[in-house]
Amino acid sequence: NAGVTQTPKFQVLKTGQSMTLQCAQDMNHEYMSWYRQDPGMGLRLIHYSVGAGITDQGEVPNGYNVSRSTTEDFPLRLLSAAPSQTSVYFCASSLQGPPEAFFGQGTRLTVV
Amino acid sequence: EDQVTQSPEALRLQEGESSSLNCSYTVSGLRGLFWYRQDPGKGPEFLFTLYSAGEEKEKERLKATLTKKESFLHITAPKPEDSATYLCAVLFSSGSARQLTFGSGTQLTVLP
Image: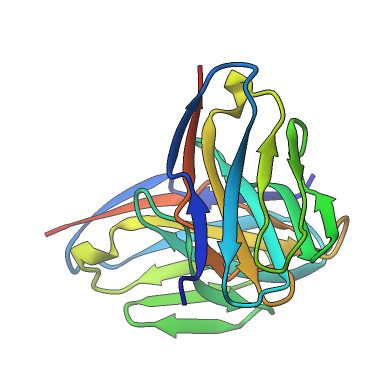
């Protein structure tokens, strides 16, 4: 099993650009989530999904969209990148609900 | 507002020098407290789950304990490979029951 796979590992965007961070898991987990991690702050939940076709907002959802068309994939879309979205993004999964047991390796995003 | 506070922010130990990390929370209705380890450039790795005051969990040189207001991660005779950031997270029953709140972590360095 590959676990939770995130792509890309690094990305630089210009302000206003859009992009999609990819996340896939091969463990047949129902629950998937996206977090951002900023220096001096804890991981903050952006969006989560309890199963295919079901998503909900977390603590910091503004500027991000998600969809869950399959159990395996949970992409995160940045609609119009802003410097405040410079962060490290983690995708995570668990069989049913938090706590998330598996995290991806992260995507380091810089918005200039 | 529910809060999770970890202390100290950073801790440097000599190899073999035992110590403890603290995670305190201000909330009622705790549904679980979880410890993770995070290595530089990687996603968090799940360590322990604690559900009720008095509970203890052990893994190698680590032991996690829980009281009504805080948790401790005790590190006995640490080795350099224990160097990492240790995160705690709490699942509350108030508000959204499906979200974790993370502390900002303790960065542990064990010197040989």
